[in-house]
Amino acid sequence: MAAKELSDSIFEVQKSGKRFLGTKNAVPGSAVYGERLVEVEGDEYRIWDARRSKLGAMVLKKMKIPIKSDSHVLYLGAASGTTVSHVSDIVTDGLVYAVEFSPRTMRELIQLCDTRSNIVPILADANHPASYAHIVEQVDVVFQDVAQPNQAQIAAVNCEQFLKDEGHLLLSIKARSIDTVASPAKIFKEEVKKLEKEFDTKFEVLKKHDLAPFHEDHLGLIAQKVSR
Image 1 (cartoon, one colour):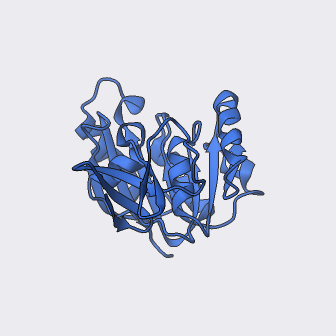
Image 2 (cartoon, one colour; image 1 turned 135 degrees about the vertical axis):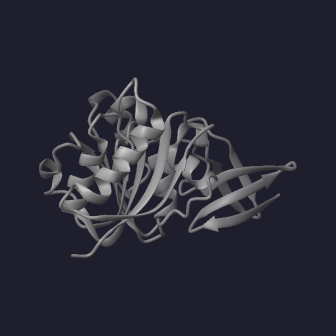
């Protein structure tokens, strides 16, 4: 068995001739969503299922993830914390502000926070960043995975308020949440154009990639906030 670091605290774990995506477990012995735990040279890794994580899929699509051990991350659409938990593994000296709208899934997220002190759960609507401005400080990265039609706008208003200049936006664009009829390629093109030209906050799109076969009709995008 071996573990190869792909980027900061994200690993390719080799076991029995197979390769898996993983993060070093910040809470050894504890799984979050039924994922496998694998020990390599004294360290425990949590296998990261890309079919349950847009961010994991972006990693497997060889998109360079700009999250470091000391990053402060605003995560929009945290749900019950599947991907949030892997971000928590990465930012060992940082913090994850995890915003979720559903009270039911928030209860599960809060349970996760009982063992992971670097996650701050926030029950709020990501359309209204002012409602959590008293909690969230300036962040290095905004990651968004929300199923709403105005995805680009949500990303822009949150980055305007919280993302540092030259910080990074990681966005999962869900075509079918925007339009159930139009082609995903057309939707992706329009959403990228909005980010580049339609908002007060300006972005430079660094990389984008279709997330199939892990997630159909999804585009993963990495952009950088342009300094004013």
